[in-house]
Amino acid sequence: MTPNFILLVLIAAFARAADRPTLPANLTLNQALAIALANSTVIRSAQAGLDQATGRYAQSRATRLPQVDIGLRQNLQTVNLIGVGIPIPSATGKLGPFGSMDARIFFSQELLNFEHRRSWESVRAQEDSSRFLVNNARELVSLNVVVSYLEALRAKATRDTLVEQIRLATELYKLTRERTDQGVAAELDAVRAMQPVNSLEQQRQEAEQNYIAAKLNLANILQARVSSDFDVTDSAAYGEGTIPDRDAAVQAAIASRSDYRAAEANVKAAELKVRSIKSTRLPTIKAMFDDGQMGNSPVHNLNTYKLQGAIDIPVFTGGRTRGEIDEAQGALREAQITLDQSRSQIETEVLVAISGVEWALKQVATSAGNVNLSRQELELSRARFSQGITDNTEVVNAQDRLSRADDATIRANYTLGLARANFARAVGVAETTYHK
Image 1 (cartoon, helix red, strand yellow):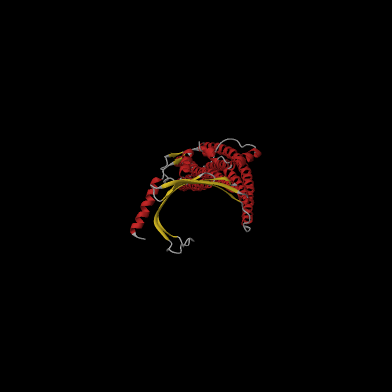
Image 2 (cartoon, rainbow, N blue to C red):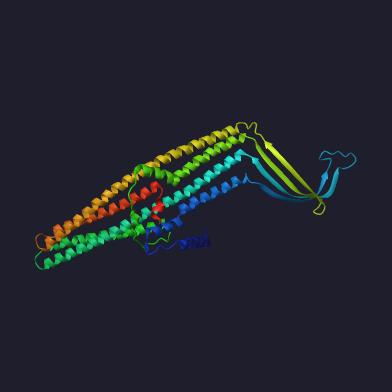
């Protein structure tokens, strides 16, 4: 590669990077979804497919609309009459040169063509399928953004919890050091109190790095400028609301899932394709008309016209039509199988998502109770240590149990948010649920 080529590639790369939006300092879930839905390559790819389907629909519809053309011709020519079958014994047969001019408008219209009508309807159904696939792409992007946002929230919560735990551990160390200096506690107690501070600080550093990595991943998914110079602060990502009846949720999913409706449209398109091919056995009727000026020059001419009607009746195609019908019926059966598989998959996803939310709600309630108990234990242990009833081992153990309870709460909230997001996707309302 030449240096100039490399320079052009770098310039193009920087230009694309400059087009990416910069994330705000405090990124809400709604803002993240708006950025992703506007920039996602997945959605743009689905939209490109829809544009192609729309173009095919316009081409198919054109066969059923009037066709109008204008033709202009001016010739200077010679003709060999003998060569065209007019014998002239005493002459060479050459005539000309002479002028020939023709300028006219041509009009044609199909009056009856069942094949083209069914084909047009089939292509229209395919366009509907592509439109549903765009909506499905938006749903998938919304789910991906919510999941990534939840991961960033989880990493941030872990870091913030560790900061609080470090504060508590530091306070215990200071209290232990004071008692050691006063000769009330042993040096071993001070060492024992300092160890959790160092251990928690290492965990905090790791959590800080995990938070940065989660933010970078989120920025990449949003197709924004890849940077970690922002914070996620929106607890709406955890979702809200109660879970509806299972049967009602399944029916709602079947009615609203864009991928299922796209599969339905594909079945309809395949059915119409079969009917279109079968219609090639039927007669077609077409009308044609042209009107214009004909003569030897634009000045010397006469008006001429032609009105024509045509009927085309297929008689024998050598088995081609039968083969096309068999192929189209095979495609129809394949589309029906895909539709059945899609329905079964949707039912499974809805039921799994409902079960996941129910389980996660129980985990959140249980973990919240454990956190309250752990905090009470820590307060009581600190009071006992301050009064000299026990050494700080009891307090250190209580802080460790509080740390594990906080971690369990963070995991439970993340699991609940993820389960709610999966449920919204399973029902087909991920975008409308989170993008408000």
